[in-house]
Image: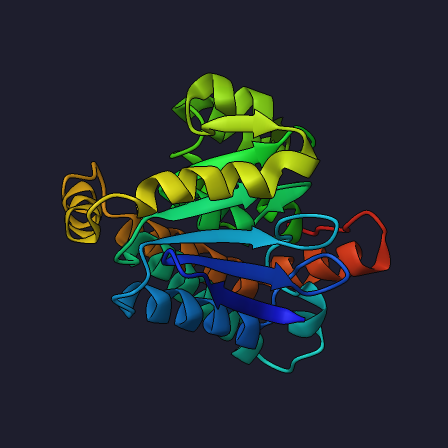
Length: 253
């Protein structure tokens, strides 16, 4: 349970999120994921990382129950810093990261996948940002790496999801396969990368990050500032409480 990792003899590392019931990560879970991915990237024997999950879906974002059970803003600050650390760890990992997505990929899951190098998905995978329904913002930076600009805006405003097939059409998902073939598909791509010169692949990862069109860390940090403002206004607490109570939120502003 939690964050598991393993490395095979070919230098293929596998990081598995397994946090029932929905793979929503606690503050500690986000920091642990960041630590594991960074350590693997720093290991000279590792040539590629596969990031996947067990259970019903890939990732459901932050643990809202933990946030609502905490006094003050410590859990909010922790979740924001933890997500920032995990997203950055994926992006800055010294070797390519392949995200293998099944079921739902929501909120923080979008941040992980949007910063991955390669994405494969099962045919039941869906992607979305329900942040506005939770009184928060964030990861539009990463969603914009998955879908076109106006599609991203519509998804943020409405909290609608997109299918793996849609993302494949946009070119952000490399392959869509039956769920039973997802792990093997990711492993096949990983083996192809691992067979190449690790020196060249690590240089390729660094060079591709260096020519990226925008700074994903700064862009995401800017988004997070608005989440802090929304929490100070009180609207976020009501949105999260309504979600946990399974009722419509009652907004006064």
